[in-house]
Every structure is written in C-alpha cells, then in structure tokens.
Length: 131
Ligand code: MN
Image (cartoon, rainbow, N blue to C red):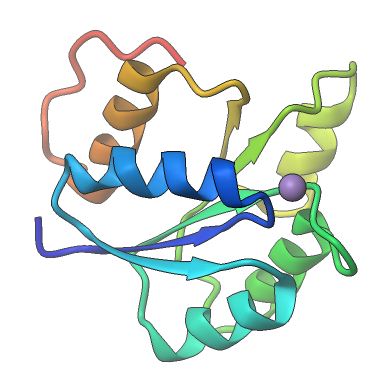
C-alpha cells in the first residue's frame, strides 16, 4: 500500500508491536517516541494517518493532537488514539481533543488492522469491522 503511517508511542515494546502489525499492510511507517519528534515527522513525513498514544512523557497525546488540529497543514491527517485509558469520559476527552477515532489497548490485531486499512483506503468494503 503506497501510504505512510506515523506511529507516536513512547513504549518500545508497544512501538515494535504496532510497527510489526503495520508491516503486514506494507505501508511506510514513521516512528516518533515523543511529542517533538511527532510534530517534526507530521510536517516532514507527510503521513496519511497518525496513530497516537495518549500517555506520553512531557506533552501528552491529547495536547499533541490539539496542536496538530490547529495547524492547517496537519489538520487533515486522521488521528487515531491508541490508549489503555478506559475510564468513563476518557473517550469524550480524546474525541474533544480532535482525534478522529479511538482504539483501546491491548490492541485486538484483526480489528486494529481492519480499522487502519479502512482509513487508508476509504473505498474498501468495511466487512466485519467491530471496533
Ligand atoms: Mn505511552
């Protein structure tokens, strides 16, 4: 797939897993381990999708998403939050920050790949997607 995905994730094991899963889609993967790296790659790497860990050291994924959505060059890039947060109200806060969707950790491989594929190829039939 001729697409680029930016993964923002500070945990090396989680990063490795997401990169491995994305590898099955044959997309180009950019890796950012903190907010400054993510901001840089969001501008220079021209990603088609950003997978955003919410809990990051320093600036968190919600603040980072707000900044990306306030910048007209990065605003159109879909942002999917990846987070273990599951308290009532978390999803609302994540969506209010400007994220376009939400995937709960631990990642369910099949639905994760189906959702990513659906976002990268909107015309593909959406069979069996259960977020
Ligand atoms: Mn994290």
